[in-house]
Image (tube, rainbow, N blue to C red):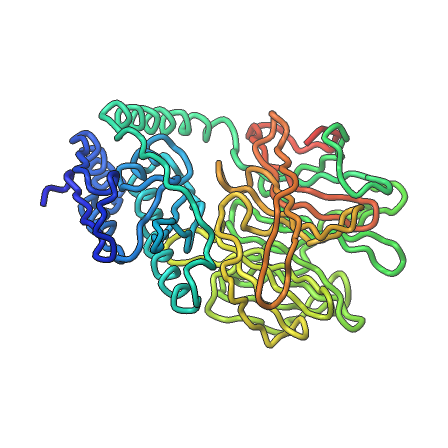
Length: 466
């Protein structure tokens, strides 16, 4: 069978041939040549291997790419630098199309076609397995929502491939010059005194405290102690080591200024970040991200805030990021994004519940409760807004990692179901390139902001807009 002539076969369970699934799809030689170029230059997966994997689908399912069937549609999406929305569907007896599993897939670097395709097809295989399991556990197909199948886009052409290649080469050249002049993706922290407000205004001015040239500060978490003093914990990552530690500064409750210089309070042989803080039975605990150790670990203040001792390991052999706890209605809930297969840990949010913050943890039957690169990964404490709504901040990693913030209202949270509704998207100011983590304690809100800085510039404290 020729690589560029994919002929999907009619489904055994449905003799009515779907018009868009049984046409011969021809792909230009230019795409094969570009994939061979990526394989030779970057050791990317071979195109033939990727397409062979794409044909290994379960006969009872159809796969849609941004609503339309056909592998050609996925190729078009990736060549145009769009986010693939992969859906696994099944037809019912009356011809209705039921959605069984879906994912908005995180593509870390859209400039590389083979890697993007490999990630998409890897997630597709995971979704097919997930769909098979869900059908086994469900009594009726009618329990799944009905979706419409869109008309497939016009097949991509050699022009699409050439545009992709030109963009790839142009960005590679430009990035070389950028690396010499600036540091991209540099994180700093900003804080804002909101008074009694529960939400920040886009017009508000924030006190920006950028990190030094040789490191970045990210993942800020605020803690207000019994005396009303504010403590800020955050990821401190020196570029020389590439390994994060947890640092701390105290904030003066009157002036809102730093009254100490940052001091490292927790360091391990592996990378640390996202220092989630909580209190339980009079003690203060921290759950830093420890995916580099394939664990979820808890540390107890001994004493607060300058020293932390290992208290428990909640989970082992897991690549989990940005673990966040919520104590609601007598139950402890653990939200965390987990890396599945070869993809990043940006786009699949998993939920667990337990009677205490130390377990035993039971997985939610709807896991992953969110499979969407725009709003899966946690971005700070879950909180209640002025209207009493339970709000989950999330990272938007569609354009790039930490590009923006989403705020989602949790509508249903119990041991059988989970539902949420996005209510607000907060983008960074034009001169910034991202927002990443959002937290609040008392009347102070902190956020980290991503920026591109000149390698010759010095870090300065000042006010700016997000």
